[in-house]
Image 1: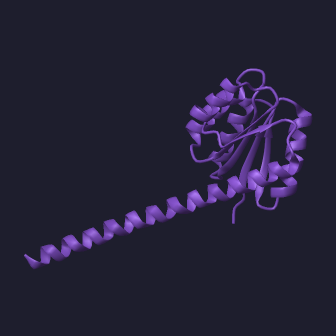
Image 2: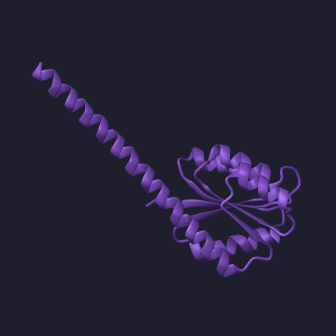
Image 3: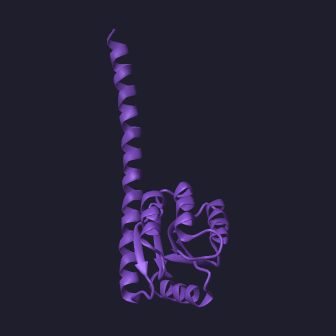
Length: 163
């Protein structure tokens, strides 16, 4: 089974490294953990991952960064990856930023700094499980739609044979 990707974006190297270490410890067996120092770098990284045919399951980003802010980054990520899990991690975002991320960025979780390691692990695990359920449900729906079309074609052939 191919590993999914967790992408973490923060302009503070110490925060980014702590986040990577904690996620690697909990999800390293099943996921590749990638980091970026800015939203722009994060978008480039996501495109590289997508270009390789891999799936970005989770994106974790800080809100307050130079250049593109976290909620704006999540909005762009949502345009490209509407099904991926998005987590906004911040110590400074105001309510307006959180509302923007929910309304336009498909935000799944808002986590305040400093975060509790176990709560973050639990939240990410639950969100990954939900992501996988959604993918499985979409696959089953696609299979059912294909089967319905096949049965409709069979029915049309049978009706034509009766005439």
